[in-house]
Length: 227
Image 1 (tube, helix red, strand yellow):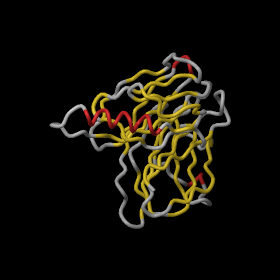
Image 2: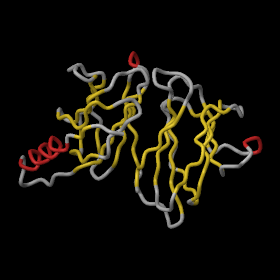
Image 3: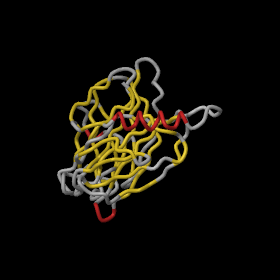
Image 4: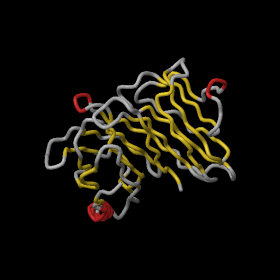
């Protein structure tokens, strides 16, 4: 994941905000953005009018950025364009963390705002959240098992998850897992993560995705919420 982070722009924005008032403390939130529109070109991402990432390709994401809390404008523009394909102003709570997904196909592109819980799990455990981000995939069931578990006898941890829906965080013992996503109500596998080692203390978000351009083969990306 290589793209140019314009940290100075964010810093300048924070400094300007701090200079606005000596009486009120400046509060911030953490914000991360993900390019999840399978047929969209590379994009630039702006926060409160300042570019924070440029030339972001499909399935890439920013790191967490410190932004002012309150109403915060998030804009997404195709590279070399001043046209906003997304222009949203979610209200961000101080000291909270958020992920904004630029999701769906270009003609229906939308911002999906997720509230992230970056609280560390108890010793020996991990926390995992699952997001259905594949616009051409039907509703799905999700299985989180050991790598060699027989899917035929496994029980899903989530059922009938539709596009745009995020689960809560699942707390699991630290181990190597295999995440399989099936068409809801069946054992027909649409996504197979293979081995996913998760170490104690980690918090992860797993997002089901379309192939570039849309459709199959479906895949997944894993984002580090903590550690």
